[in-house]
Image 1 (cartoon, rainbow, N blue to C red):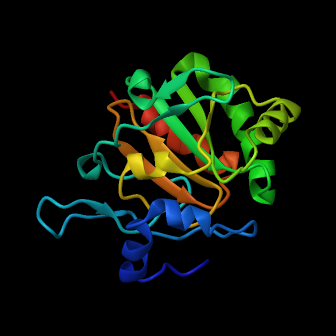
Image 2 (image 1 turned 180 degrees about the vertical axis):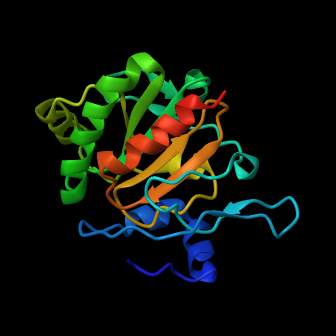
Length: 204
């Protein structure tokens, strides 16, 4: 198990999410957090201090609203997180050059095709791919069917909020009320993700 980084180091990283994604490397490992992935000790200030343990979710009372995520889709048109309120939304941050992403993203598409009729929405956030054309070709080659936002500058990470995202791939799960329910850093196996989706789907 990879040890959790000190809170000070995580807070420093989350202060500039775009910079953190800029420094992402292809060989990645996930952070290991406990049940509580948030710190509410500073009054009204809210920050996620570490990632969730794979497959776990943040307790309902400790979740906070995701920021107003929006961006341009690779296939054309725009995406806004608010349009999927009432669904469980999986935001998958990836890049086509990232080896773990090359395995994880197609696996996520398989889960999406199985669950989209049940109100589970996946949205790819293609970050740090310098060529939009190359990114589109990779998406088509892999047969990815969920919508993908082209976000080379990782602006959506800033929009999302103070969420740790020090490496790719990273996955943020949003509950039906538009709140951040889980943050996973590093590759997530379908066997880890599906129990979390089952739990969130049962919530009102």
